[in-house]
Structure formats: C-alpha cells, structure tokens
Length: 334
Length: 134
Image (tube, rainbow over all chains, first blue to last red; front, side, top):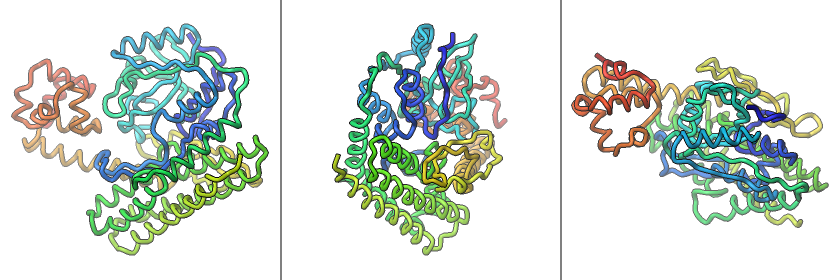
C-alpha cells in the first residue's frame, strides 16, 4: 500500500519540513519557511543546569511539537493525534491509516534510523518524518532532512517510535483529517510574528528568549576560569552543533526565519517585512561568524583568556542586534 | 549568507558526507533560495569532537572492564551512547539497580532473563555481552 501522489521534498528542518510536506499533500500550499514562521519556530534558550550528555542545553528553536501544532491551529486544519501503549498497537494503527491512503507524520528517535549517516545518530527523540506507504516488511519514509524518500524496516521503525528517554515518543503519530478549501495566511503570519516577538522579548527569566543570549555570553567569558580545557571545548562544540549541525538551514534557524519574512513581505506586499528579512540575514551572518570562531577556539583548545573574551563579545553582538530587531518588529502595525 | 558563500566542506567520517543538507541563502537578486550543502568546516569540527569524546570515554571504560573494575554492561551502555538513566529506562529497572549491574559483582549475579533483556537492548547476543573483556 502506497499513498498515491505523495511528494517528498527536502527541507532544512524536520518539523517545519514535515508540516510543509503533509499540508502540501492536502492542497494547502505552504513552504518550509512559511510553516516555520507561522509556527513561531524561532527562539533562543540556554539552560546551564540542564545537562544533556554532560553539556548544558542550548536551543535556537521552540520546543518540539509546537511548530506543527501552531501551524495547523492557525490555518484551521483538523488533525488526528495519538499515542500508544505498545509498539504492536502503534504499528497496527499506522497500517490502518496507510490502508486508507493517509500519509502519517510521527515522532521518532534518530538513533534508530539506519538510513541517516551514523555521525548524526545520537539519542535525539524528537525527530519528525512522514510514512507514506508499506511494501512487504518495509515502510516508505519521507524524512525531510533527506534528499530523496527512503525506506526503513518495520523492526527499526518500531524501535524508533518507542525509544526511551525525554521526550519519549510513545508511538506519537498524527495525520490530517480535514483541511479547509481556503485558508487565511495573512492572519496566521501576523499571529506567528507576534508570538515570536513575544517569546524572544518577554520572558522575565534569564534562560529563555533574547536574555539567554547574554547569559550564554557571560558564561563563555568564564569558561577558561571555571572549566577544564576538555570541558570548555565540549561546551563550545555543543553550541555549534545546536546552531549548525542539526537541520537549521544555517545560523541557528535565523536564515530560515529571514526567508519566511521575505515570503510574507511578498505575499502581503509589505516592504517593511522585506527590510526585516534583510536585517535578520545580516544578524545570521554574525551568528555564523561566532560559530566559525568558536570552532577555531574549540580545535585549538587554548585557554588564553583573550579568545574567550572575544567569543563572548561576538555573541553579545548577536544578542544586541536581535534585541533591537525584535523590539522594532514587536511594534509592527498590521 | 550569499548563495555562492554556502560552504561545501565534506567530512569523511561515519558517513557524514553521504547526506547533503538544505541551507537557506540569498541569491544575487536578494531572494532567499534553498542550497544543497555537504557541510561546513566549523560544524564538522564540532561533530567530530563530540564523537572523539565518545570514543575516548569508551576506550577508558573498555580498559576498566578489562581490569575488572566495571562490568561489560558499562561498555555496551556507552557504546550505544546511553547513560545510566537512559539504560535504566530501557531495562525497566531503577537506576540503583542498574548501577549495581555496572559493577562486575552485580553483573555476575544477573539472571539469564535479565542478561537476555540487556543483550536485546544492545541488539547483541548474550554471549557477546558476557564474554566481553575476557
């Protein structure tokens, strides 16, 4: 059983990519940047006390699942979502949906996806993909980070859907039940932009939003004093990976969000949004510059204080620019 | 970032260069477009470093297993990139229980059923698990 006419498209990021691929199948035309922007995917967070594999957590995006939920809500799409107690039940439900020619999105762990390069396969449990068919013992997979559609054995998929550890997928799957004939993109875009500004500027705590960039900058300044060389390098490496290694489209989703602003500018015929897009592109370049120098520092493993001070300043620059950017964008008149 | 500035630095390590990612960059008319990229030096260095750390730590654990300070379970846990909380979840045990099994004395007392369960988690045979480091 194969869902006819399901089209696989490669995207930068798994969740916005799955959203775009699924909605396009239901004739709700949407690009990845649009899905990312409407879903208010852009964010920043740094949690020094939440250690993942021994390094503090840093994120450039909102929490898993939020993009998809917001996009479908804002575009008035009715979804079916379900979690399961056992792999058997989860796989049965998947087969039933496929028999009815429904492409199914689901949450998986990248550790159990053999088609991905081993270099990427850590225990990350919030990877999204679409299954759009089954042939024999194999499922047909549209994984947005892959160039072409691929296949996975039933055993591996079951493992990936029932990986342990936070966030536990427990077979979580979702599909479209009903999509409206006409959707109000402009309103959804406005809601998305407003929410992103709010999430970046309003949190009164230091770990989330724009403030967290300065928190991280302060921490980096102190790395040579507080950490061993090995740890300092690992911490820096983790920031670079969150910013560039996982599918972010470059500069920790900043380019992807700029692409969204540009598309919104064209759709709504607003030059100011185009201005914002160009500005964010420049900010993205500064993030790349930070990552470039962080990688050099990481490889050299020198604990000379000047470099870490400079790195901290490079990051602070990104923080200052984004602060001005979101403060201005908050006050857009619609 | 301009379209012609998108880096194409391959990393020949653990199939990394097998996957080209989609990047977003600006073309000559200032329009955003998707560009396929095999990788970037900075990102590659971070990827490689994360794995180097895994391998260094795994080698240390292997030595400890061979010296009889830790059980083979500790080795396979790390080989599968797991830590104690995660392995405990997979095994359906409390962390303090699994912690005992990470020591040779606790490991020696494991029932055949429990050994089978651990072997299954790591996708290896019981024999591979118990004979490691001997």
